[in-house]
Image (cartoon, rainbow, N blue to C red; front, top):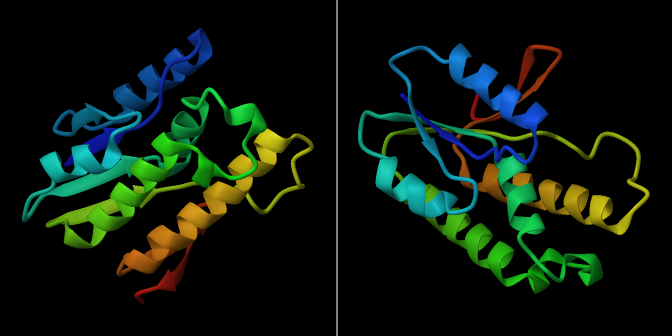
Length: 154
């Protein structure tokens, strides 16, 4: 099993959180850090018979949005070249990958509408990304309170 981790340790609390996740993984899990170039990393790591877990798409999205210098004035992530390029590459790559790919994402659209433009942009893009990824996946499972609800692929 290969875990592709997308988190970046921007502060000490996040660094501690990442360390806890690393320690919780079984020793036979191989971890690859890919905070931005996810499609490229998936192409390198995917193979027949191999299981890859991407943890998680939501942090990856956050990394892409935070890379943009023009983010404050952006009303659409489509105007952000890095985001558009990496998102499009991921969506094109997913259907072609061999092996089993498990993509973890957070559902951030179930709460209140964020007060600030950046929060709204993030929430909207996370929803669009989850929909586009789900469209390309054979099986989609929503987990709430530890209970799985199969949305696609029985």
